[in-house]
Image (cartoon, rainbow, N blue to C red; front, side):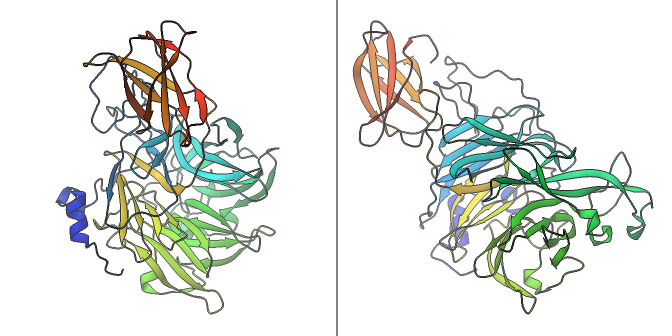
Length: 513
């Protein structure tokens, strides 16, 4: 990585990362896929003034308790896209924050948050995609089991209304690792299927049990399965690097392959990432055959030592014969740290070298999960999986933005996109006292990316409201002091030109809006 104006030592000092508690893995061996807490705690009320550390509290939306993002910026400004897309998961039983899906700006302020609490709603793989020619939000939600999931893919439109719910067919259940919409408005999904297999080649029983990796292409509109691929038909169990241990029984099948990403190719094929074989597989959609293996025990490519990876996630194809992925290299460790990795592939000579790598100054090691998004300017957004960090790097490999959830919150993947949200729901408000007299109005509109100003209305009745204040938006929730006793209030969301976008319902002081 090239040296930059901002040294790693200076960054560490600014980020307050100096110390053994951060410079080493925070949760070595921590199983990030385990079931989340069963959160039945009640939301705080408007009368509660104490905010738990690391958690947002909004008077106008007391039902929302997203974790706070701590942002550390460097001298180099981060590039666009404008928003971070994260799916925080709160695993501690006593955590006051909620798991869910979050769009945040580059200052760490929530733009949109959708809580997802309960064992059947674990949030994963949140991103912007395109469906039927329109930008949409997509994610996976469901139950998390032993390193995999059983659930559904969900599609929301730009007004945050559900468009579709996508399931696997043929008796399979969609896994948490991938929900990818193609240009043909089909969905590519992964499933884990317990089945019997001969494990004698890895010193296991001849009548053992494994999780086969299933890939399906499903027509979103009809649910028809257009393509299905079973790893056991094409990838032998002996390709695994995963230790069998006491697994391989019907009660505890052996996860020999652990598929975790799918990427379409220009010629109609698919590139699959398999964590437990340390390999990428290009497969034919027409025959299902493996056309090549990259890395792993049976690689068809000569992979230079620095380009070799292990326990990887999120492999994506890019122009210039490049492949970007997140190299966990952990659990058990195979290298000094995790990294975002860009490979240069010579398909004719079958050689692979390092094009770029992105390493956190604290040398983070992610035991599981993780993501790597190569950006247009040549930099990257790296999600550190089981670690609570998301980092943006410039094209030279220098970090320009670092965000951190409160421990032990984490996000399976992290993405950055531009987004325009126009919520179907109305703005919300709450009314509180002000020590100097009058009232403080708290205004918010969950998901709006266009509101820049708030106009406050007040009156003695719902039908007699008049403008009493105008204020610039200051975050998810904006507090506006008004010299008026109401007791009825409403707010109007305005764009930067003063155009009215939406108006809240009027409320009387003491009511929730």
